[in-house]
Length: 328
Image (tube, rainbow, N blue to C red):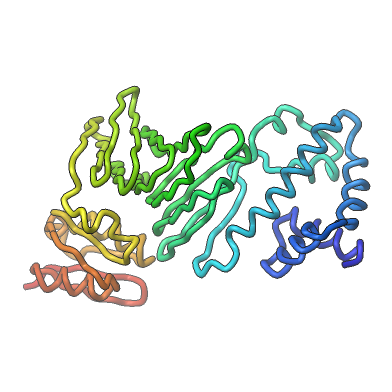
């Protein structure tokens, strides 16, 4: 690749305009033995930054940008859509680079902050990512995880909004921590699921393998396999219990849906996220109808048929809108 083509491509990448094919080209250049295109480009760009930018900061910025480009490998060949974007209030390396070069000024305090990465699975989608330490994270629909560029260096902290299953790479030196709401879940090497949607009243941690410690407002509870811990955000209580269905600890990972005395109101919220639909109710009295059962082939029609077949509820589908009404 000639230098001009490379510089244009890298500029497009820094502005977030490249597609996966172009990202592959960038990776190929950086994987080459000499990477002369990058050396020439970086010398010109970085040497043109304002004088107060020290050499060690330039080197750090280079390393961070390389890390970001190669991190894209984790998201390649995924069938589900994953968005990676800058977190509001944080300054990613691309933004700091552009400001330093094009803007002609530099905010040193901002550059001291960690670069943050946000990965999301939209409603109706599920995704899998591999973190820099090899930890595998499966994201359920409507879920976002956030981690910083210091992950696997200074910390292994992940912030969660939604539901995710974590297969943690063991590291005795740096514990793995998930933060969601007021809950902090710490593990060294283990497999566990955390459900912590911001619009729900509970945060539920389910342990499949290993051991985790959940902390809420200074109160700690440890979990063993097949146990769950539930934090009630309204009552501000932390409850540990044995999972009722040890053969279905994390149903969504097997394309299953488990209802345990779940209200139709709460079921509607699950369906909206999982199938990217809008649900309306023709009769408010049916909101508190409750359901218990495991649906294995969890297609939308299977779920709706179960609801309709086990209660006096009818459903009607129009596009992506589902209307529930009471049978007369």
